[in-house]
Length: 404
Image (cartoon, rainbow, N blue to C red; front, top):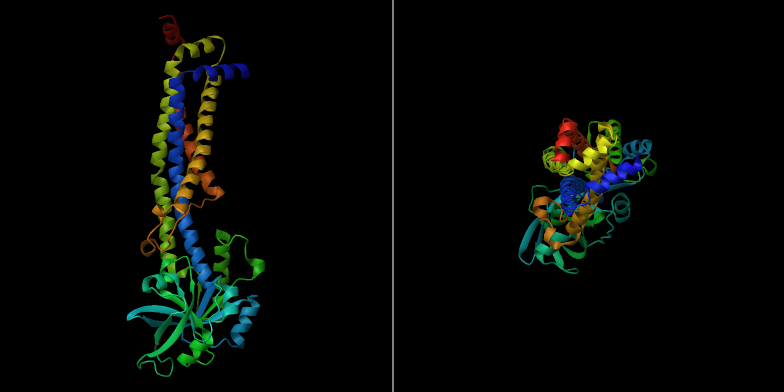
């Protein structure tokens, strides 16, 4: 029987017209699959790039007091120890105006302690007493160079909040690339003790970033499991600190945008199924084309004892082969799209619109299985309709074609 199958396959695909039709069907189906995969992958890549930048800049969880500035006292430290949280970075965060060459810009200043901040986040900066690290977009916009002096206009802090701002010079020590345009455009880092001194805060801070314990952190910090773990610790920390503190995950600033992208991904994925269905009609047309073009040969195989059930299995085998080749080719096309997005400047996104400067295609195994499985389901249902049409053709019709 295997020999009959091989002979039938070779007969069906001997002509150049059949081979060209088959190649067109495979490419069309693979292109449709790659469009869906690329769309899903770009959206997942956007979310993961955005979350990665937020995690890089903020750590895993942040919390602050509803009353403003506070001290890390023994009570807070005890609650953190209960949750086995060792890496924390107390910060002083305030708004200021930066002045340079008769230009001014509102920026967000973070007063940090280099060692603790580096452990909690991925940012490695060591600002001295009069040093400042600026987001890379601030340097571009102002034309600031390393070693230049900029002036910060700060409010008087707790002593004189409503008074005129004070001006303090700082030397640009370095630049920071957060991977998120808005943070690169607005955020700067100075020495925490120096900022506390300028604002008259003594040892008080108004923001604390922290990192989850290593033994509960998944190896893949971009996975859904990791996000679930962060949310779990966020709720546990809020329960322990009480209502006087606000506890948020690192992505809270863009949570609405992230949720919108998730919803949009699902909707676009459903709409793009129409593209796959159209391509599957080409597969169906290919099967009908072969059945009509090779009707005499197919009749001879039936006359030699090949049942309709076995003939249907041959057609399904051919359709499955087309699906397998199309899926493999779609993976190659997705990789080409990803390479173009990552390497060509033409595909660089305007950061002021899309938040991140460059996108990439990031797909999980589940994404591939879902798209490939849905495509095969559509293919199988439409193929069943085509085979039902073929099945209705009688042997007498085959005899008339054979001896016409």
